[in-house]
Length: 168
Image (spheres, rainbow, N blue to C red):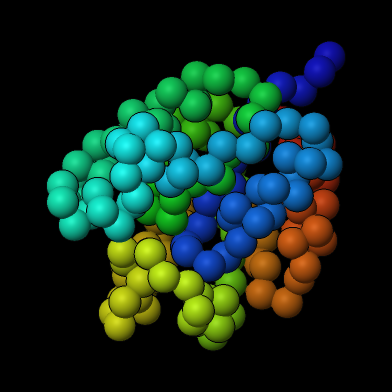
């Protein structure tokens, strides 16, 4: 029987969700959905503009819609935004739809990875406080992989092995 459960990658920004997701999708011959990209596509504007013009609460509303839609699909690799599964209901919805894996990295690794990036509305001078606030939500996720000193390909293989050997 073919395993058509979704593979859902979550975690804080800079942990490698999209990059690892691309590798997992390629290796499993599945489509990758980056939920932040999907939200931006549906809204017709970048995430940073949604935050500026419409506020975080509207962004979270769009995020819940995208979460529920893709949880109802099968056979995807889904890279969530860093805050999507902080919401307990979203987390339960994705747990029911497939294997959820939280990618972790040290704060130093996150800082280094994101130093040159722009357009992340929640990556500012107080990002470490946000990281601390989200830690308990991330801890509630059953499966974790530390990406700190690993290549995206190595992490992707760990995700695939976990998917192949787990039933939930």
